[in-house]
Image (cartoon, rainbow, N blue to C red):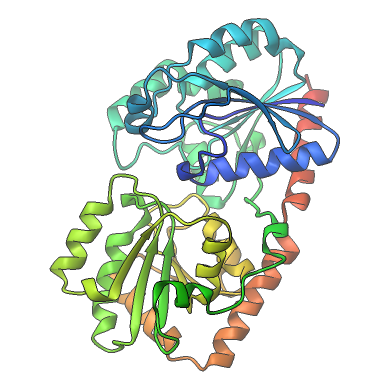
Length: 392
């Protein structure tokens, strides 16, 4: 098959979170399976940076980056002005067998939808949790839906949901159940075959071996529930002072608020901020953590939970995370979105014997190895592609 992937951000723009990893890993697996994969994306690297290479091959994936006229609009409002995509679509789009769009309210989707309809090319939509009108920009999202969004959803051959939470979101927008396929996100298990030795992260950042590490590793964003975690940690710290809260991730405009709350709660000496870490440094953080916490207010899935489990690290997640249904009782403790309950869950976990913690982590690692490898998930997505093409 000749497959077109469409997403506003693509590696090395990993700071834009889960959809970047999902599209990249899926594309790699599809290439391995013999398909031709092209990615249409923008040159945005971050709020101010751009990616110089406009056309390149990454792991067999043909990547075409269109100049985004305003990184500010892209970062603040998810508005991508990419006139180059318009001209490219006119000349090239009809050669593809199927199109896979990532995210929902993007100008890229507007252009691609128009030409997909014109040339009768089926397209898949994987919104990656971007359907709800929550947190901010409600009016803009509502206007997008009225003028374009409902039509894009209606004409999609299929939509992909990664969890039960996202199924409900699609249905609330009028998508019929028969169009919704549930496929969880996966991880590239090859990245976890040669894990760093235990102790590297602690040694590098001066954390004693007798101190517990509570790890948060994700974008610093209001939606991730860091305010809840900081409050829970402050309550926990009264009972267990040999504990550090380690916060790792790129700032998505919320870091100053988190720092302010840490200072107000007088726990700044026990909360460590490291910014984003990648590769072996990121893995070493997972390995040395006693427990990984994803306290999200809203989370469509939660790839970082799978990464932690792949390292054998137990996790605690709120019931607002889509991944909770998959991992509950399998290396994970699921709690309601409540600071007191979260703090009690962390305290109970840290009071477990080392063997009990390790058993929990091993159980989670086994789950990931058996069910969440990208090679398995890609086969499910291929099946959807073939079905859409055959129904064309």
